[in-house]
Each structure stands twice: as structure tokens, then as C-alpha cells.
Image (tube, rainbow, N blue to C red):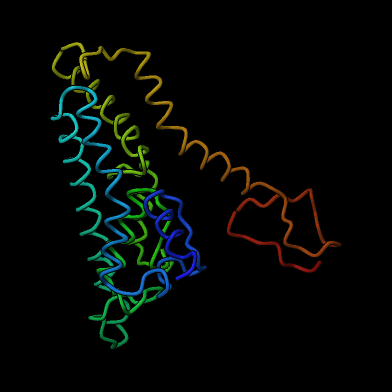
Length: 251
């Protein structure tokens, strides 16, 4: 009803993340049933998958597109299996106190979707970089959260956003072809073009940008002076050495 439908299409097909309501795709007005949940997952995956096949046609070799899509499918299905198993298993500490962990981890999830619907949506949104969500990622188990972070930090390559996963996985393909060429003693080539030192430097630089930004800004934030104290208690000469420590002392 109203503007929700139009914004929902933009959110999923255009990979623009946040929904019309604050609860995103966990809100019943945006995602009312298991059927709509499957349609939303399909909407996130259809364009990135099509672009991979279009890449094969554009370079004149459809096998290039199908090979990349097969690699993406392995990453996607492997992520889905691991994330679902982690969420369905629940917290093992429940067994230690006599509780039944058979229900799995339901924290931050909607009962309409359960672990399976939440796991599928989580993998689809992190593997495509959509930004939509029908569950809270912070409430996932450590392994489940790790899988979501893995998909994000590898560049959303399975199958990626509208084009972003394609050029991200091509960077990995260039490096893999280069290493493979060195191992067999042949000049590395991809799509009929030689891969030399210049191309590898650019590929490595592109891959290292994300972790470098994360580590550099993380280190800067960990060493900034503490601003959590009261205005009269701010001490600029004592930087915070641990990002998890907050200055709460009153004198």
C-alpha cells in the first residue's frame, strides 16, 4: 500500500539497502510472508546473476560467464549452509544449563521466517551488497556473523551487487591466473590479454584498499583521546589505547 511497494522494488532491485520502515524486510508491510521473502531474495539475486552471464556474452566466450557464476554459486551455497547450520544449532551453552537448543538461535529473528528464511536473506544481502535485512545480524551466532562478514569483506562477490561483485571477483581471477601461470611456467593470460606486473599491482592495490581503510581508521579511532568523560574531566594527554575501554572515571 502507498509508497512502500515502489520503494521496496528500488531497495531490492537497485541494491539500495534500507527499507521504508525502520525494521526493513522484517516489517510485515514490507515482507508479510515466506512467499514474499523468497521473492525478495530472488529480486536481490536476479540482476547480479544476469550480469555475470552478460559478461560472458560481451567478451565473446559464454564459458567465462558460466565459470564465474559456478564459482559464485559455490561461495553462495557454502555460505548458506554454514550460516544456517550455525543459527539452527543455537547456543551450545544452553545445553550446559539444561535448556533445549533444538529451537536454534531465534534472537533478532522473525518467527515467520525462522533460521532458514533469515539465513537465506542474510547470505543473499551480504553476497549482493544490497543492505536489506529481515533479521538482526548482531544477534547471530559467532559463526553466522563471521559468514556475513566474510561475504562483505571479500567484496560481495557471490554474485555481487549490480556489477560490483563481477569486477571484484575478476580481481581475484586475475591474481589466480597470474599465480597459476607462474606455477606452470607460462605467461599468464586472461581473455587473450597478458597479465604482467603492472596489472597485478593494480589488482593487489584494489583488493588491499578495503582492509587498509578498516585497519587505518580503526587504529586512529583506538588512539583518539577519550571524549566519553564529562566536559570538565576531559584529558587530552591520555589517549585511549584500547578501543573497548571507555573513560568513565570521575576524577
